Amino acid sequence: MALSQLIARETQAFLETHPKSAAQASALKQHWLFGAPFHWMNDWAAPIVAEDGDGAVLTDIDDNTYDDFCLGDTPGMFGHGRPEIARAIAEQARRGATFMLPTAEAADVGALLAARFGLPLWQTTLSASDANRALIRWARAVTGKAVIVVFDGCYHGMVEDCFVELRHGRTRPDAGLIGQVFDMTRTTRAVPFNDIGALEGALAQGDVAAVLAEPAMTNCGMILPEEHFWKRAQALAKKAGALLILDETHTLSCGPGGATQAWDLAPDALVIGKAIAGGFPAAIWGVSAELGHKIQSWTAGASPANTVSTSTTVAGEGAGGPRTGRSGIGTTLAGNAMGIAAIGATLRELATPEAYAAMLAGAETLVGKLRDVIAKRALPWCVVHVGARAEIVFAPAPPKDAAAMRPALAQTELNHVLHLYLMNRGVLIAPFHMMMLVSPVTTAQQIDRLVAAVDSFAAEYLQESAA
Image 1 (tube, rainbow, N blue to C red):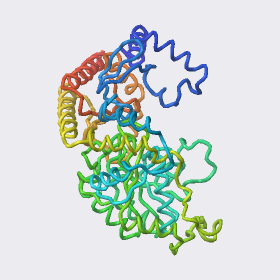
Image 2 (image 1 turned 135 degrees about the horizontal axis):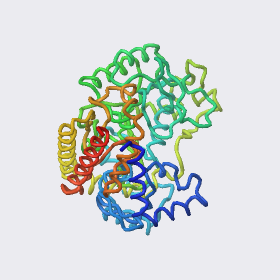
Image 3 (image 1 turned 180 degrees about the vertical axis):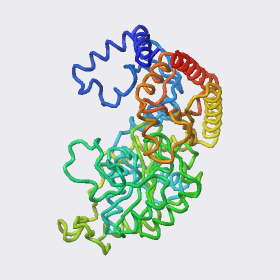
Image 4 (image 1 turned 30 degrees about the vertical axis):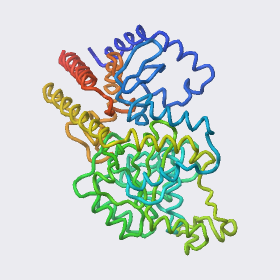
């Protein structure tokens, strides 16, 4: 059976068991652009309309239940419908959702963040996109330099500066940057992940404000850092006078303090989104004492740097008048009282050492069993694993950079049909590639069902491929 035939069979099976979701998908198209409140909701192999989430189980409007290893693409990392978050949000909502003022809880949350992640000074936003944007702008302001360096294949949210890719050794605009008229390659350089020589070359021109990276890449497939990569990369950035910004939006699954603490990293700034508020829309960014002092000095007018070498002006004296103590970086709802309450509840009650112990142990079990399936079936696949997150990659060995990962991601029919096959057997994984996340409430039985579904698919796939 060709993949197209398998897709047709599984699509028909899905439609027969999801009539309400199919009907609702048609209704959604009447008034929602792209047929959903947000168009990424269409990236699933077939349309599901959610009804309820409880722990690591999702139920759709057809009363189908799923073992959920997607968890909202990470915001639900600690489980859906957690009463701790519901209680914190409801209690704050009764007192007021947002005041444009801090609450007493904010002081406690700031202390919790400093103790947890090792950086003393923090700000909140509504998303990791906003947090990354803020730090890029602050890095340019305090260094007086225009350029940022990112790794090829990166994704740091809807941040225009990061929509570039590396082609034939040169940084090119990414096709996903729709409607942008400014050429981001003027101020952003992309280099291959794990390539210390390329990173050193990108920093050598002396015009780099910051290196922005995930500790392990998770958006262009999962790509792990090679041994000593970050030790050397940190030293290069420091030598070049460039700030190191780590985006831990996905690698927060590595432990209570994310990969930064688990791997003994020392960034100048840290971004965490998605799961930091238990699924409530909130993100945070933190900075070292030294960078915090520079930021506060800049707003007071004490920064020596007002312009950058590319003739792009950094806002301040000579660029719109004297500074007023306001940065123009932020949104009205950032730091709202409900978000602060949700972050506090997450840090105290969800993201505990005990929760992480369960998550990491579950992920180890999942990875071991998936590797057993791959070995038993002699599949040309591998499993990449970081923290509580794992990914099946359609390549015999883990790729070390985006260029090596792209051929695996290009197997779109195989990706599509495996997702659809899992959905039909009551298993959800992240829809973008073959990424899975284990929560502290994921059970051994759920892990076994996921592994059994992958094994069943592999048997059918290989049998028909040999026919």
